[in-house]
Image 1 (tube, rainbow, N blue to C red):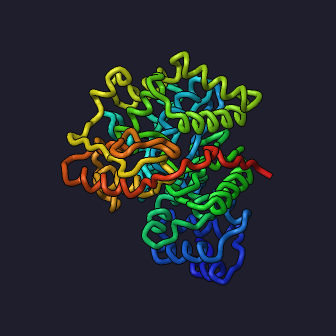
Image 2: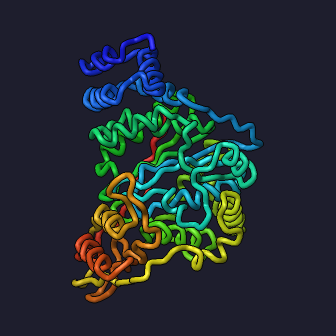
Image 3: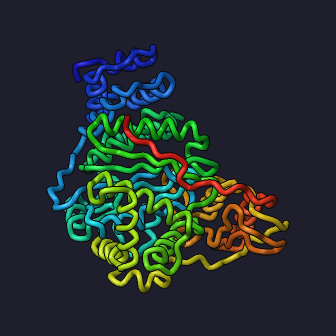
Length: 438
């Protein structure tokens, strides 16, 4: 390090704009250990309170990307990925990665675990017997090349500065910084060697960013910084005022994805978001001339069974069962207790506290209250009623899958309180806005 970290912190604390060299030097010290945890926490808090302009966030993103390995794929097709800010019943990654692979793209998808009330893709995949979510880089490369897609967790080699800074943000009330969120997401994506990215920024009662204004700010930040760092990106703001899929949990969302890929069942809103995100990526990657052509290609990949075949190939290549699709309902863990949550009034579902549904899954054991907590992959909610659904007194709003009667009853109370029954609400689009580079 050539610059004193405390001077960089002081400059940001006082509202100054940091030079790229100052940011790079600080991140280098964070990676090497020369910057202490207290200094990293102070930097994060100063950034949260004072913010960063676009040039600073681009510099921060590039510095964190350069803190580890940057993958170079040299594959015969474009390398693309999708990232979501997280929600309830959001299992899009499980279907979209193999759908894109079936359309000629390569998808090295680096995903995360559950955070707060939102589910994590890796926790869902951990419910598949034998599936390795943390393979070495050689295996990761091989599976992407052979299957066209691989969904794994962040390795120690990719953007290690982000891993350290995120752990500090998580315990210092600085997670909400849009500048730090942007750099955290994009540093991992750039390190993965992407050629195109689509962002799914959620908004609504179950979203990390609950208001449209905050969601729009984050979506714009990600697009502008990604383009500034040389990564073509489109952001879609999508609605999270009801669960995206009719299931929320780990194994139950994997089974929901299997049903989607095989055509057994496709939740309408889930299908629309999956197609919208995928079509944007195919167009960005020049695999389709228009978004409409991209949607048609994705539909063909589903109808032909090519997407399902790619998913099964990925699962087997990462240690899971070779015949997973046919045996998923038997292979996935199941909770022994089921309990229907019955409506106490008659009418339509007029509002849903989606965050409360996510917390019900967490309380069942399907999420974490502390970083080191284990996960019960079999618990969750299924057959969740959506906004506008007509219900009669005593009709089920959802079904709880639990480990025991006590936790089932407790979750049922939370779920019942999350649903408001009244007049039928005005239908809202699931894709709220599309944001592209200026």
